[in-house]
Length: 335
Image 1 (tube, rainbow, N blue to C red):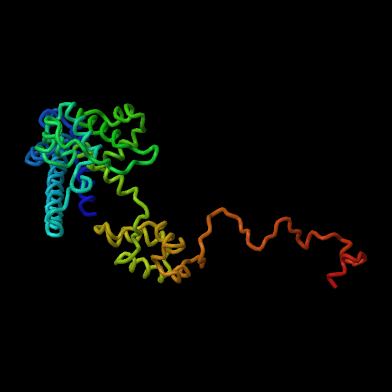
Image 2 (image 1 turned 90 degrees about the vertical axis):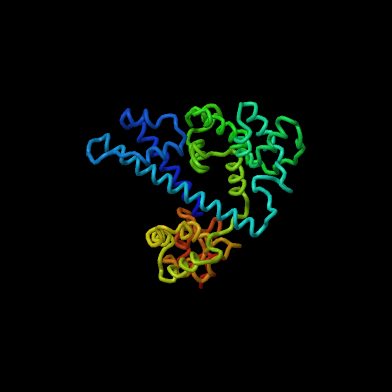
């Protein structure tokens, strides 16, 4: 979770740097044009913009600050990667690459991606980084025709979702420096769909088709673990429910009380489901009585109350006037 937050913050910093370069002075654009993200951040972080207050100087100072933040976040991400690798090696020294299939073999779709990228002129080392194996292994496949047998990936996204072929086209479009709108038009998709896909998986500079596909598979798995199964977040929510806080107040207050802790985040809908949805039970049922409504069962807004009503029921206020004098035998039951 911490690593994901750092990647998202780095993507935002990179986008802000790009926007400032585009709108900044021409000298700055010429100096930073055509550089890789790392070299651009290193050069911008070393610049000396001066102490003036004119727009060009202020823009250069903002670019330098964002570049240094980008470099700090990159170091943090690399540190997290090293820590995870060390833990994996300690727990399972012979563990396979998480992007590979069973027994460490690449699935069929990944090997096809390697061949397609090679046909586009990609280097072996870049293909290896994308598909999740070593460059010599890619060379054995695409040059020598070895190790071509493989099992399928075993998961297909639902209809309407991005497929691995779509993500591969996004990757190729980004490598050609195409805009997200042009990539969306080529795939007959909404630009917002492609923008969300790229931003959620490292941004333009670090997008990986297969890592994005693995992330989509992990998010599509059901049932999903509930955030209120156990732990500090569950205890905090239960305590505030007992103090008669509403789920919406709890959700918003956690953002203020724990601004730097992404683990202490929960939506009001998750709290309601943990209280009312049968089969979850993450929060004690008696906590539902702490809600201001006092309900122990959830009711959709706008739904009329139907309990206690019979179909075609006639109200007593609608009875005819002759029922009052009981002159007809059928009205005697009221005596």
